[in-house]
Length: 476
Ligand SMILES: C[S@@+](CC[C@H](N)C(=O)[O-])C[C@H]1O[C@@H](n2cnc3c(N)ncnc32)[C@H](O)[C@@H]1O
Image 1 (cartoon, rainbow, N blue to C red):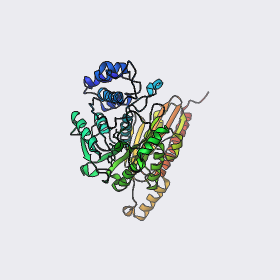
Image 2: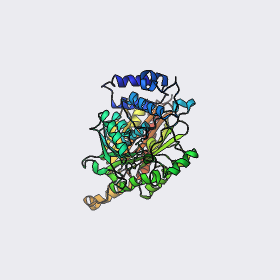
Image 3: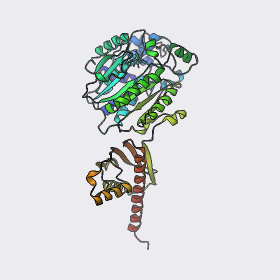
Image 4: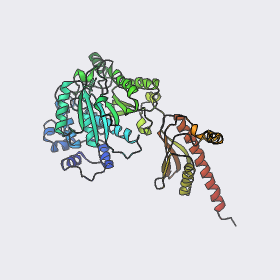
């Protein structure tokens, strides 16, 4: 793990040109896995030195909180940020539990990290491609587009209804030379909430994101603060336009959901951060009501108490990996989680003939009528794409019938793209065959495929056992 000093050095001396996207992602992922040393940062940043006392920072002082955010953004992301005193400061410091400094991290970066993993796990392409995203309610900091553009070759349409915030956002974009990557849009409260008309019609929009105003009213904000319910108010509390919206965050994200029902696959992922756990369940209910089964729920933990949640949904078929789709430990949210996308199909005790086992499994799958099947003999994993349940007996029977009656060409059933990844993991305890649901809307297809895979793997294994027995020299 690199220290903050290293991070500063990297930014100041410019991150080496040869840094791969993977290394870059790793660097950002690890940034706050250990606590920053304020004394060390103070030695590197004169402005920070003026507000820190030794290794202590007064988190109740808005000036200190603002400066910490600015310093970390400068040191770790190479971003120069200017913010007015009367607008929300990116929540880098909502709460610090002094004995638990290691838990401290930039909350805003968590959303970007999750988004990257969501997008990377829902494409057949190599991660790191150019993408267009929309940030709704970008605020004076324009923080999400800034962080996104620093980490990936992303382009943003960033909206807000607040002129003051938009003025500062423009200033921040310009002083970071991001005018070609971030386009600001002024929305009016009654406008469609997703400014899709600002995205070039030819562009594939990869995601919508938002950190919405959480509260229904100023009174609710005060009540929650008084009851010490989440999220906590801090020195960074923003202006009413930033914190309060009619109907609260559920209504705000609900508007995105309503518009998404019309836009559907025009945008791959609709996502939102949430301040209250109850909002997750409410929004998932609405998604299910509209038969949107491809969704993800996660929680972002900061310190011991502070949590945020995020939901994402898609009308396209690519399914996120399990840790992204079901990234929640809160027991009460279990009922709100989407279907599993990864399972351990079958396991065997350790045995030697792994490559024969793998080639047996790969041979069986390659005999299916697949649209695509590629097996990596080094990694012992392969990706399979089909448009029908070609592994089932029912499919074989139907195919035979169609051939017998010559009706092959008249088959008008709607076909669905299905994608599965098969992995053979070998460890000291044994061999595990896993399956990941990559693409498709039909959960029963995934369940059925894992059943086929289990039977296939067991058959291959028992054939190997029989062969090994017959190859063994007879005892004298
Ligand atoms: C909680 S702040 C988030 C600011 C910034 N994205 C961040 O995370 O620090 C919510 C933002 O949404 C903006 N907003 C409220 N209603 C909006 C709407 N209908 N369309 C676009 N932005 C809106 C507010 O002006 C405010 O800047």
